[in-house]
Structures are given as C-alpha cells and as structure tokens.
Image (tube, rainbow, N blue to C red; front, side):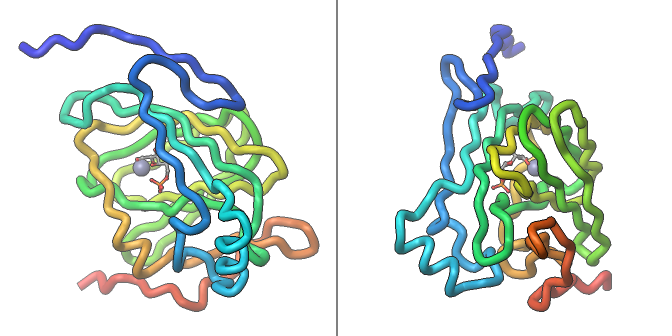
Length: 195
Ligand code: S6P
Ligand code: ZN
C-alpha cells in the first residue's frame, strides 16, 4: 500500500495557501483570450499592464483516485468592459465527480451549467459552502472590490476539460449595470446537442 504522510497547509486571506509543496498557478488577462465579451477592452487591458486575474494555490495531494485535491483560489477584483473578473471555468473530465467550495473572503458567485445549457448561479461569501454536483461546469466570478478567496476540494482523478467552455462559453454573463451585478444572455453561447 502507498501510504501518504498526513500534512496540513495554512490559509492566508491575502496570500492564499501557504506551506511546503504548495503549487501556485497564475492567470493574467493575456491568458484569458476569448473569454470576455468585449474583445477590444480585453486587448487594451492586456496591452496596458496585463493584470493578474486569479491565482490558484494547490496543496500537495496527488491527482489520482482516492485523493482529494484541495487548495485556494484568489480571484482579484476588476472588470473587462462591464464583465467582472472570473475564472476560465471548466467541466471535470471525469464528468461524474463533484466539488465543494467554501467562501473565505469577498463576495461573488458561482456560475454552474450543464453541457445542454441548464444554468444556475449561487452566491458565495465568507462562510458559504457551495456544492457543485457531478456533471455541472463551474466558473467563479468576483462581483466585489476586494479579492474573492475560495477554498475548494475535488476528487484527485476528476481532471479538467477547459475546451468546452473555451469554445461554447456559459449561457449567461454577469455584468455591471448601474454598478450592480446583473445576469444577461451570452449572445455567443452554443449548447451541446443532447443527442
Ligand atoms: C478545480 C477547481 C478550482 C479551479 C480554480 C480556477 O476543479 O474548480 O481549483 O481550478 O478555481 O478555475 P479554472 O476554471 O481556471 O480551473
Ligand atoms: Zn472544478
């Protein structure tokens, strides 16, 4: 039997997850080509400083069956045009795997969607636990002026499918209207055919 040594990590609400072996991934505006509706605004922001949109800090749990991958996402505040900063969003490659998120700091929402275009939003704030059931694609959106910090855990063998969201998007967008987060239809969304 492969026996992994128990370990702990520490969450810092500004710096993310800290500890030995924590892996840090950063996505800047330039890494998110095609994800925001206003392509001109995206290009201007990418050319003028290319700010960090989010960072993911992953604890050193193996990405394999039986393990729980876990970590912290720090999603910075900002907008591209009137669309709030958000994560790329993905489905799990192994579609029947779920995920849990726990809000640590800030305010925002999770956008959830099935491949056939059923969508839901769930608010997330400090103390909120969001359950992402199997088969739902998910994206986090920061609707506030401070970082949105989320703890997450998902099965180690879940895997990530980014391609579906990259090519089809989500059915709804969250944009600022009169300073308030508002749900609008995504004109470029295409659902998969349920067959
Ligand atoms: C992984 C989990 C999170 C996201 C992170 C960044 O299953 O949902 O760790 O990876 O919030 O989002 P994304 O869409 O770039 O992976
Ligand atoms: Zn996920």
